[in-house]
Image 1 (spheres, protein in one colour):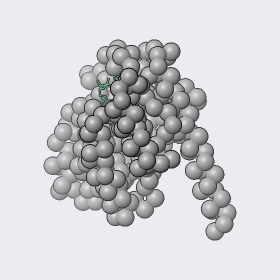
Image 2 (image 1 turned 45 degrees about the vertical axis):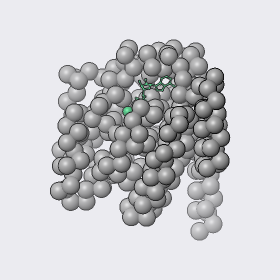
Image 3 (image 1 turned 135 degrees about the horizontal axis):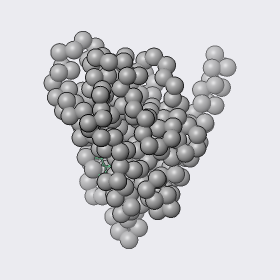
Image 4 (image 1 turned 135 degrees about the vertical axis):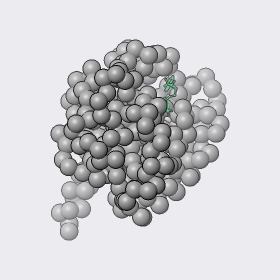
Length: 262
Ligand code: ADP
Ligand code: MG
């Protein structure tokens, strides 16, 4: 799963980290790939820069096998391929690479011992994010409930369609998650109505509330779910994970039924 939206600060990293953690809490094994040079997913999971030997940059450029870049986090069952500041130059370096859209897909090709791989994307629709969209089966789109939320979304949807046609025929949006929802703010419910009208069932029923505990957690190197399990934000991410996994089971059943028909 790629967590993508070209807008910054919409809750991609928070969603990637907490969704992954909540999945691990119900026994799934998850690998988080931090594909943003900012490295917020890595630091948010308590990974220290000095301890990083190999990063997603090295994996992307085939300099090391993904297994060699995987680090265990403090969360049981949750591993990470940490980010590197070098990723900020990757866009330009990728331009000259052969099969430049397939680098990440090729690097993640071999079977890895995880139920899910979650890719935390950078806030752009550049070659780096394109690599994530080519490598992934599905996209989770976090959307912040604010005035400009829908702006740029059609561009993201078009990009996903283009990637599906050109590189990844089964790529689909898994769902749209509304983040930083403020019940006291009419704008939040207006944005919610618009998004549900546009995306229909693709929008998860679970909405993530704006919650200070969620924003505090990364500075302790912990997912909100571990930092304060009972906080409204943590509870919402636990609900989101069960919704995501339920949707997964439905998709798998449908795929199995289709296969039987063939
Ligand atoms: P992105 O990865 O899309 O840039 P982040 O996940 O880093 O976005 O979130 C941007 C900022 O908003 C961070 O400081 C984060 O802690 C904060 N944040 C994210 N979700 C919530 C929430 N539900 N409540 C409060 N703050 C949040
Ligand atoms: Mg981020």
